[in-house]
Length: 216
Length: 216
Image (tube, rainbow over all chains, first blue to last red; front, side, top):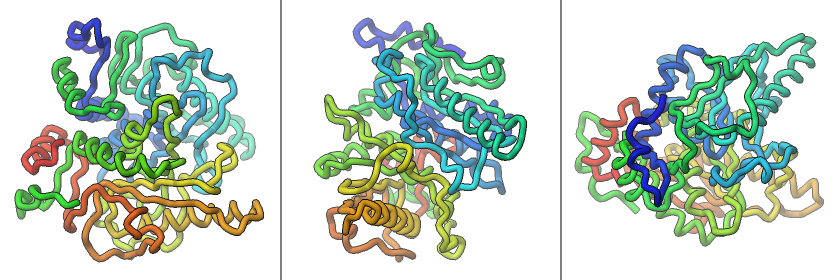
């Protein structure tokens, strides 16, 4: 889905899309209606951008009488700064450093036969999602190999609040981009998305989000 | 600091303290003024409740020209559900299971000589904070031992949005409760705190937070 109103209201000066917290909350709620049907086993939040949508989404995926979906947080070193716009593939090393990862050993979990939802706030150049998926697929294969299985049979899904419609610098496989495994709450042009958690002035953020119609 | 207004407005029916996202944002901003002076090396968010304040706080701790503070996420099994009120120490096993932890090996980080800020949303019975600190102190000691050091010289700090004024079921050491290492944005009576990320109806949440004066 695309936004209807805000882009006409984005001034030349700012070229920013202002998003309120309550709007993020509503996007997660809306997405949960789709995601609930997928019967996810684990949520993997890519930090730090994925932390907030992941935590909110968990609320909407909670089923009465069942424990909350488990959220794991992963952090890759190739995508450190909150300033997504200036991150280019040139700046990003091809070597992926796992700053934080899933403790398969300690937690006793594995990815075999699991449905796993990877969450980030934005699909900008697609580089982070590409690397995250790649690493997790590698883990799943390795776990299958150790158990003497041919295939891990892991099903990965991706959820982002916003997908920027722009040339991507990395791809996601066809198994993800099949219309069922990749969910973006909103497609947006290639603009600066001002998320509320990056704001130094939340009153201004709120005002701008309201003006652009992204307040709820 | 205590809230002045909201408790008089809490009806007998709800006995809930409604908090808006923008209010959480402002609490983090206010706390950052204190925390900035501590020159923290790492943020450790206790999941899922600590994820959101940790991500927001990182924005306010960012210094120009320096990388963002690194956030690690940890999850203990003794505090699974978002429903903090019903969690009693009886329900909680004394065995701590590290569902998610810091990848000291992969990430190449350690706690030696570091200033570490542990973040959670609420200090309710204090059980989670007690165990989290205990485990992290153990890690630091183990790292010191391996390096042949007498002491890890790690300085731990704790930040929570809300501290409930009630008998606690676990203690924090004097080194934390010395007036400098434990920061709670607001002390509150023993009530139900309705955080926005747990809300199924964000418009109602916002309305109630505004009525109670916790909207910004």
